Length: 171
Image 1 (cartoon, helix red, strand yellow):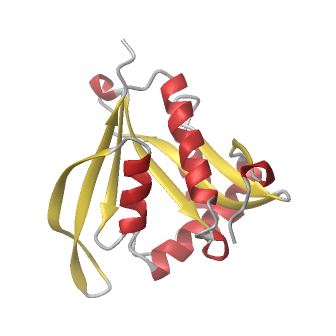
Image 2 (cartoon, rainbow, N blue to C red):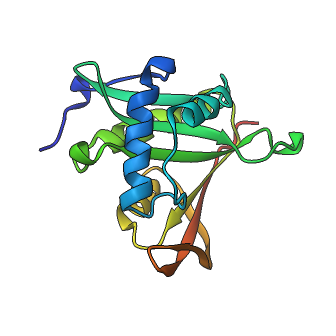
């Protein structure tokens, strides 16, 4: 069942969203390869993670009826100042709300925000087998840069990672 964008509220994440963000992320840690984390994260860990984000590196949440059903972030790529215009994009959707268009809508909002923030380079690392994410990125103007072969080990196997990029020409 597809959800209409008018039913989804997108807003900046805050400390009150940490439990939902942590639940959504930990489900991906335990059951999927969208993240190569192999150990669940604590609430305290996610609070520290949220504190590492700022106005230029925001975390957004998607809510339906005031319930957080997805989150997305723009994270620093490096602490070296020459990379200040470069961010890594992440999007996670609660397992009960996937394939409804929520992730796409949230992703589109995140890309628009990145452009408005004056960021220059967006990149994503997408694990082997996640063709849905590859298609989402392609629909939003990302291009495949390359594949890192067998770079991650999860669930008893080595997995490839596809690197995708989007470059804004906002000079």
